[in-house]
Length: 428
Ligand code: B12
Image (cartoon, rainbow, N blue to C red; front, side):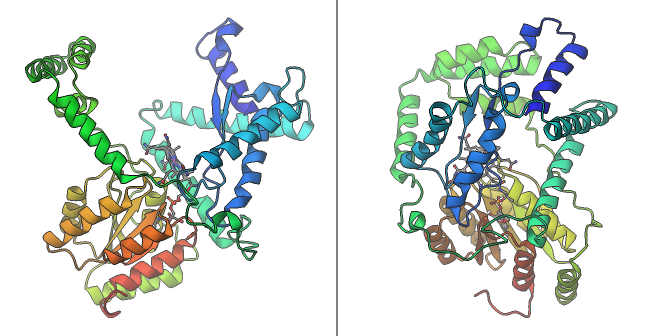
């Protein structure tokens, strides 16, 4: 964070010519790294969160304006009020029972190894920025940036899988006493389905109570402005005033401008990242021979959540294992996934859902696959899926359900190969 704060100041001054130090003051909020929080032995997450909070509180120079801490059950699902309270107490203990947040205290300053680390991080970041500049800037370099993120996440996951990076409770010290925290069946917040029905009803009532003629006129004015390139703000405000919803507003601008699909960071071309994958690559080749064509794996990401990491990592590893992959990125509708399954002639369909809407989405998707005559394609799913829901998904005909505790990607790949194997019999 100190490197970050220094760089902001230097770049604002040298690149953008902001000479008044007051205007270069950097105000930022931080949520500590939740990606490293684990589903296994989730009580350990509290220590991880505390240690990470120290990074932004122990040095005055790096102090964030706001700190947001996740809860111990981050990788299990949404926190309940008590979980949030436990997390907030961490901040309050830090603020009121230690002197670290006082204006006069600053730790970790002028400590040689810390200074060296900050300097090294700054050099690395400046080199990366120079590279992006040489590509023509951030917009031009978006594909490069996205694939670098996916690559770096893949390297991290592979280190954990190979045991090169220790994650306590995950790849080391896995055995332990059962946790009383996860003993009950109310470990995470369960959203009442009636809330959705209530929201839908309120939206319908809202629409019914509007002057529909005025809505149509407002949407038409918005469409015209978008088409002829004039400022869409005045018609947008007019639309809001007559009760147009954000969804209706979005539909109009999407119809005119089209929809941007960002790069996925996962190229479909065969890769050379095959180290340690000989056995699984051989299995892929054997099954492909039996199928008479290369094993095709369709990775789909239905629903509205943008949690793409899991889908990217599974698709990347499947590709590295020699499968032919198809992954179009986030926010596909069930219809689009059925279409993709048909056009790619997928042997196995994989879906990733971290939004909590896995049951309703999978009911719809499994039904639509059946209607399209594709009900025989094995489907696997992964994401934040509580155990009870996993049982319900299996009853819907889903062959395998994975969660963050399934960190051994090669094991997942073997499962996929087995499911695609025409000689392996019906899906258990
Ligand atoms: C990183 C992260 C984000 C990033 C996502 C970046 C990205 N491009 O992916 C950002 C910061 C954007 C984000 C935002 C939000 N997040 Co978030 N996020 C996480 C976090 C910390 C890690 C997810 C992750 O990337 N894990 C790493 C990948 C590799 O793991 P994975 O996806 O679980 O995949 C593994 C398995 O599940 C499985 N798998 C997954 N998919 C598939 C598919 C197949 C086919 C197979 C075989 C296997 C498989 O294999 C993988 C390997 O083990 C989780 C908590 C956690 N620790 O899990 C919350 C979490 C998923 N987020 C959550 C929420 C609520 C949000 C927000 C709505 C918060 C908010 N109020 O704004 C937003 C939504 C943003 C959006 N538009 O969708 C909730 C979801 C709650 C739920 N489902 O009940 C979680 C669980 C945190 C929490 N406890 O509240 N988030």
